[in-house]
Amino acid sequence: MKLSHKLLLFTCIFYSSLFFAQTNNNSEPKSRKNQITELIEKSCENIDNKRYYGARKYLDDALKISRELKDNNSMGLIYYKIGEILLYLEEYNEAELSYQKAILKQELTKNTKELADSYVGLGDTYVKVYKFDSAIKNYETAQDYYKEADDLESSLTATLKKGIVHFKQDEFSYALEEFNKCIEGSNTKENKKNIDVLSASYIYKGHIESRLVDLEKGSKSAYKGFLMAKENNLVEVLRTSYIIMSDIEELNNNLKKSNKYLKTHIRYNDSLDALKSNNLSTKKRLEFLSNDQTEYQREKIENLKELKSTKAINKATTMLSIALITILSLFTISLYKNNTIRKKSNSKLSSKNKELIIAKDKAEEATKAKANFLSTVTHELRTPLYAVTGLTNMLIEENPKKQQIQHLKSLKFSGDYLLSFINDILEVNKIEAQKVQIENHVFNLKTKTEDIISALKNSQPQNGLNIHFEYDKGLPLYFNVDQVKISQILINLIGNSIKFAKNGDISVSYTHLTLPTIYSV
Image (cartoon, rainbow, N blue to C red; front, side, top):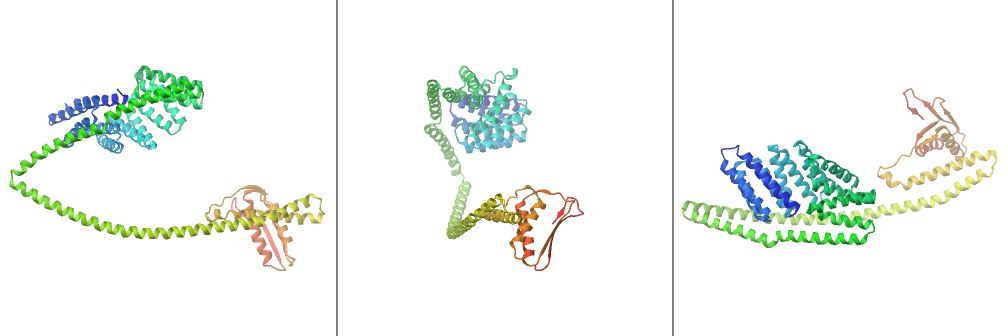
């Protein structure tokens, strides 16, 4: 029998007995509560005989009675068990809904053990639909409730499932941490019977260690878990362990053993899938629905006989039929109007979408053209500037005359500045997106200002201007800022002063303000 079948059967027996013990304390609706217990026991028998659709029918009947009694404890239990069956039947959306309903009812009864089980079931459902983050959150919630209920064994099962989800997402460090917790917890005296968790933890841990830590160490861990699973016939653990052992043997270059494990995995997997497919065959589902439908039709005939015996009931039936026809007619008219409006709206949306696509294409073409233009222009400017700066460096290195050195340095500074400015132009898209980055460097502010004044003085015609520079001795010489941006500001300020002034004085001074840590230019 599959591990999942055993767990499902165990929970059926456990919860039904628990429920039976609780209902004995209530005397008023005792017979109906006993009926719920009997229906749950019958569903467990059906699960044991792999008649899952029959089990679902008994649970539906039990749910109907518990709703009439407004018994939240019973409804929480039944929704949880229906969720287990739906999960096995691979009806994941319905299983998720059933587990959520179970949690709502169990939160009202404050049953932490049942709450934890429902969160684990919900986590298992999310794993099946690849919602791994949601699965982990539900497993963590289940761990908290298990600790509150002092159920360490079940808490380790939730920890193992959480580790497996991390493993599926290649989050191996997190997964290894969870598997180590399971091994440590399962080896205690209180949890020696938790062999399935211990076996699976060793196998997954060995797989991770063989790939990321140490192949020999990982092989030993995985083989230890594999032997546990084999000796105890842990069906679900063996289903995973054969393919993991095949992978590890392949890493050990033992291809013969690897192939043997792989073939065993395929045979084992196919046999389990065939058994499940037989249990969930379409024929069995149709047989169940057919039997259920026959019973429904028999009840319907009896009801019709009763209706025909009374004129008042016949009259009520006629009135209801007329009302239903009227409602259906109004509903049909409403649908027709809605469809007409929807068609018109869709037509308008379609035309607007076409216009937006055309506008988008034009904008993309304009952006591309602008980018190409900037790239071409800046490339053409940078080529001669590289020649200018290169030749300037060569002239400085060739021992020029003393009176020429300052001119060459000014020329070099101007060339470097223009190159830096052109590089900023290339980042025009960043400027438009307001993503300009500030690059801070330590530099001498006084020397930088003197170089700029010298370069600008030499680049401008003689117009009778005198440029004075003063630097407060109380200021530091070095600052950690973006010197390119500072250079641009100074060049703009001093350059405009030279450009628009004649026969006068221009003063550039740095002074220390009275406010602390604030400087002005």
